[in-house]
Length: 594
Image (cartoon, rainbow, N blue to C red):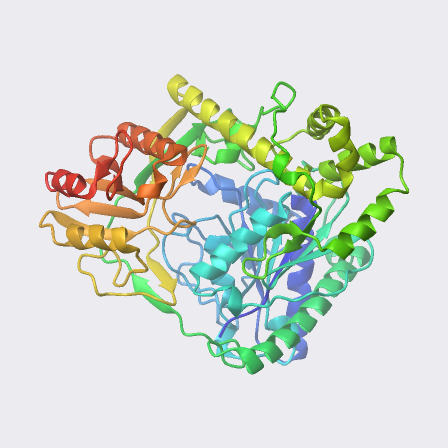
């Protein structure tokens, strides 16, 4: 049985995440005791990902928790290399563990059915990767449903600037645990009261976020005067957590009702049979790009390097010197409305109706030209300002440059076409950022500031609804087997080769392998030969002989060159190809010799 829906709570800084996690744990345990249950809700603290896992990193966090008054026996560190849970039964009624400190990727399975709260305390400006831990908080303790609905859901607390990325990360975790958008709650609900939180929803993942823009993003983690008493007895904190739990209760009730009425996959208690497939081979770590770091740049510990994220390449990105050439032709003459798609729950836009258009035009007549232009600039700015890579003054100046460069005719129409213009500007900025990241990546690589290290490990178990064991030599007992015709043809040929040891269908999301650089490139297949050669295979339809394919081929070839003699990257087309790629028969002939 599973704890759904997931409640995603986004706070202003790391200290707020920790404060609220402690109060929430305290409240959930009190609720459990009132129900005469032995349930002991546990918080998983997800620390900053580091290149070299070390006890010192996690001991710092543990010591800070002890210093505020939490009993040392209630805290444990559990990572791939440090295991303070060894020989501890978390279900034992005498077990005291209430807080577990971990990181993003756990390389071996472990059982934590009492985990209720995942509190990510990664840097606010970094990508929040919580998907690899979602499965740890979903399973219901002792496979039972509780009377108090607050105990039938799970909670994720973060301090990310970008809700969309965080939500996608949580959704990816649910997908990895065998769920889809149809298996968790999507619902609208009323906003909470003070301190002016904003409530959003994304496929049943509910976000409470504080709009205090003047908060100190880099506030010190747990200041010296903090104690467990003034955290758990803080009226404002207690009230905030109470409102979150109240809404969680409402959502759980509605979720149960919807599951009972509509779902053929889940029973009334949210139970779902998910296939689990174990890895069959022992595989060495696969190289990924790492960025060398100055001392003191990672939370809790000095480290020499970290696994590269594309956001790391945007640090000094500026719009001040960038061009403002944008083709707005497609935007002209239409008014657009922005909405959340029912298919994927992400923002989309479409033309509004003629009646809506006329109403909006009448409203626009009430404002003068100067006011409308100022409103347009402010509206565009408000829609784009959440990008962590952009300085707000730099962004606003860039928008002003674009607007001031428009013809008088387009300025007059700007406000009633604001969403289409915003989309064009966003796409332009993303294009500029992509070009900048690519340039910075190759510059740093050539200077030796980006290197390659063996960092990636396959998960011991993969979970999904649809797994197949029809093909021989798979890395896992069963693999996802949703292949197109080209992929099917290639895999059939690959499996028949005598020198192939195993193959794996690589999904295009974490925790799967990606060539991490200015883009995250997920090859379609990973193949290992009997000689230990690792082959990354990207398949492309004949309509994909474009710049995107050329960019990925260049990156993949560079990765293979830096990774060493036993690593290879191939891009394969069926009939047409780009320079450096292969056709199917050419590829098969090549890997026969590896």
